[in-house]
Amino acid sequence: MESARNWYKKGEALLEELGNTHLPRGFAALWYLGQSGFALKTGETLCFFDPVLADLIGKDGATRRYYPAPFAPEDAAKTGVSYVFCTHDHLDHLQPDTLAPLAKAQPSLRIVVPAPSVDKVVSLGVKQEQVIGARAQQPVILPDGSRCVPIPAAHEQYETDENGDDRALSYLFVTADGLKLFHAGDTVVTQDLIERLQQEQGLDVAMLPINGADPKRRRNNIIGNMNSREAADLAWDIDADLVIPCHYDMTYGNGEAPSHFADYMDCYYSGRKYHMMQLGERYLLCR
Image 1 (cartoon, rainbow, N blue to C red):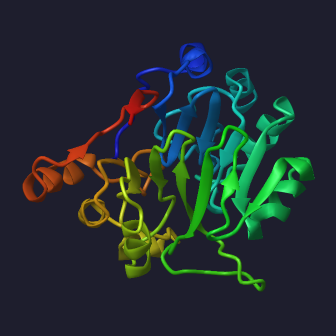
Image 2 (cartoon, one colour):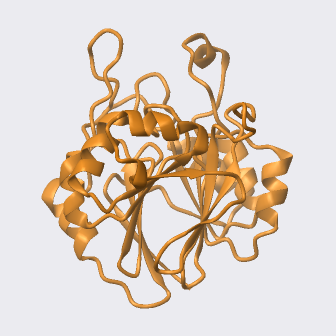
Image 3 (cartoon, rainbow, N blue to C red):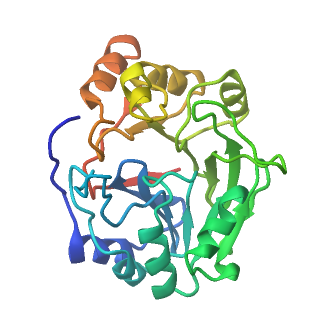
């Protein structure tokens, strides 16, 4: 993915849709916010995953983004977002210029980050009571009865801090109505990950990175992920009903053509469901 992309919906139109989407029992809505960024609404609870709502500036002072953010972080408060889940401390997943203004504009917001990243988020000026440190296999329970289970992520290896807490996480989110969504964050495929997800019966959605890992990226200090083929194979191994590829379209030098994923799915897993989401697109899910 080495060209500019346009938003299907952005600005006030997207903010209004996020805030005014009302869902009956058994339904959820998913929006794509670019890279690994998603919004999930279940009932009246709106959550963001890895949102990047500000510019990404490189060492040369130029933007690293292929496309601008859909709206400003402080404007996101208009949606009534309740939770932000960040998978790890990289700027395209945990972005200070997103979290600090959003937390200030939405005092009731809760920001969930891996436990080793709590101090960093608080240092941004975010109130301590707004930050939740996530630890593997310790569910975060939301007021509506939904729960989010952190799972260790290998980016590209499993890493823990001096307390044994994982620095990178994936999230298994189970809505109050029983919809199961897996947000991988950044990770390669490991046998531990496969076996953990195979324990889940009826995984509805898997959001998986496809940008891969290679020597060129490593020379540029870019830590990699699973690639298109590995993501498709993982989706099959864990029997995900729907797979949504991500992490291929935001930053210069770290893209991938999503057609590679589509071709592999069509060739090796014909009949399996996948969806290539447009920026700002809403996708409805139901039991």
